[in-house]
Image 1 (spheres, rainbow, N blue to C red):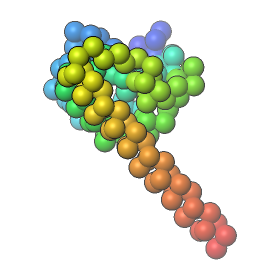
Image 2 (tube, rainbow, N blue to C red):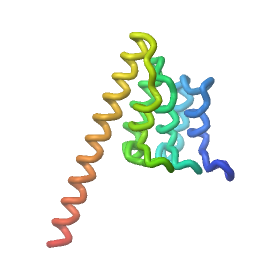
Image 3 (cartoon, rainbow, N blue to C red):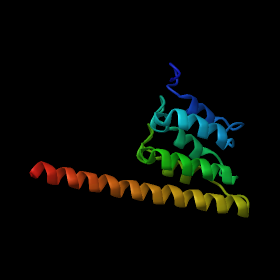
Image 4 (tube, helix red, strand yellow):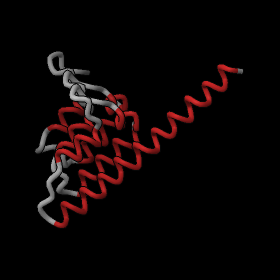
Length: 137
C-alpha cells in the first residue's frame, strides 16, 4: 500500500527513517511479506534502496540491508530517480567516512552495489540476446 501523496510504501518509510533504518529485522520482515516493495518508486522516483544508500554507512547493519535488498530484487539497482541517479550513484554522492570502521563499511557496501549491478546487467544482456535469437528463429 502506497501513501497517496508521496507514493511511498512502508518499506520506503522504514528505509528513510534514521531511527528505524538500522533495524534489519523489521526491513527483512516487510520484504518477506511484500518483496515487490523493493522496486516500488515513490513520487521522487526513489526505491527503498535509494534511501538506504543515502544514509551514512556507519554500521555493518546498513551493509546487510543493502545486500538483502540487492539480492531480493536486483532490478532496484538500475532504477533511476527523478535526477537520473541509481542507488549506486546516490551512495557514492552521500558517503563521507570519518572513521576506519565507516570506511570499511562503505567499501563493503560499494563492492556489493557494484558487483550486484554488474551481475544484473550481464543477466539482462543475456536475456536480450536469447530473445533476439528466438525472434530470428
